[in-house]
Image (cartoon, rainbow, N blue to C red; front, side, top):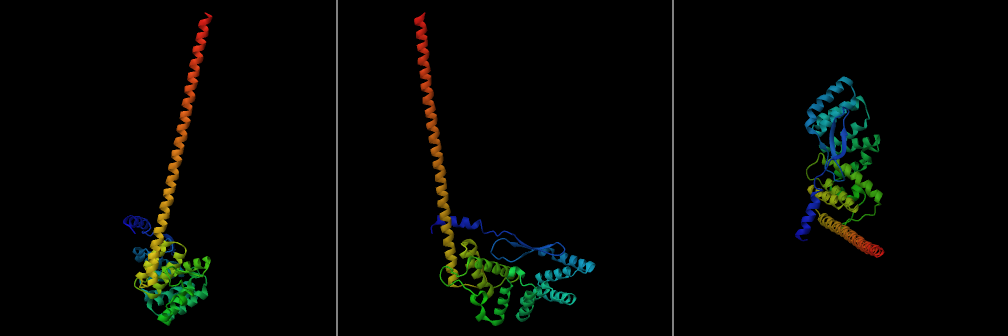
Length: 319
């Protein structure tokens, strides 16, 4: 790859390198927005508005005291969880469970807290309960949450794609799949949701996150979204997943991006040539028309002069 190609590829990637927000948001009972997600299929984790948390907790306390609306208390537990104050959050959720048993949000949040604390058995119990209360929660992706917990409980031998996803995308240079397009799309959505949640809290290497990021990258690659696939592959490596297929697919994604760039440049070249030709043809036709009009006018003027001269001569003869 010569310097010119490297420069062009760099410029193309640069315009995509700044992740934008405008994705999903989380709105609390009091109307406050607690986070905003990045748009697209690359999981970055929630972008929390942490500067507002102390004031937000005071407001939620005040509203709960005034109204006794449990939603305010539940939201306070959620904010405490984001702050890493897990024991305080658990106390709030257990209080809610006593006041109003079998709330989905309570079971889901308690399960998440136990997972963050490393108590995977209790996490599995509460997440299973949450799924029974609301099977379609989290875009129907909680089946993957259960698989993740089961793998953490079972140990290293369960940390593989076949167990976690019931599929894999091969070990060749290019990912392959027997899944239909609809199945791949559904799996992308589940992986994105579960990974986006985890990346909000887990910032260090994690083997399960690493392999799930790798498989998400494979799915996005199969959708021919090579730029996002490459970025997801890099995230998989950041979380400790570094294998030969990963490195090969990073290189392949880079090559596919370069091919797309060359194709775009070729199409742009043809587009420019077409418009240049149209301009030349238009200019030529205009020149022909002008020349034709000029010759026609010259002939008319000559004919007029000849006719005028004849009329003058005839008049002289009469005189």
